[in-house]
Amino acid sequence: MAEEEAKVESAPTVYEVGYLAAPDLTDEEVARVYAGLKDAVSGAGAEVISDELPKKIPLAYNMEKILGNTRRKFNSAYFGWVKFALPTDKISEVKQKFTDTTEVIRFLVVKTTRESATSGRRFMRDIPYRKPLVTRRKEEAKPAAPINKEEIDKEIEAMVSAE
Image (cartoon, rainbow, N blue to C red):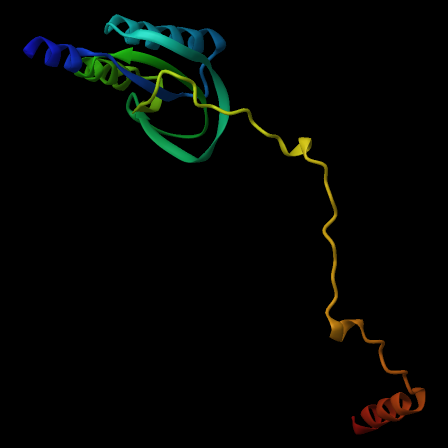
């Protein structure tokens, strides 16, 4: 019975880590950071399930991070992710490696499932555009009263002479 409990505790949990890398990296540096982070995950004893090369994206808001001795602001970054299976007691090693990597602005580790839960993206250009219908209220639909030019001329004369 104790062996069964030990097997349950050491069973690998599926995690996904998403990270943002500094936007001023060259293509070679991005590849180096990507390989280093993936090696850190597999070096901790994880089984890499899937991953994606980092792609440059605009950020929804500006982020600040102290790199070296300078505070830097970022409005874009390279976004990448790795999905892996790892025993729960070893996840702190992976988090520490991401924290120690100076090119990483921010990262997030979440528990997930082995199956891919992503659905296909539906772009707005796939949906035909339809002009919205304009409906008028009953009051607006009534025809306007005819204009009496003589009354308008009298009102204009009254305004001009009042000055």
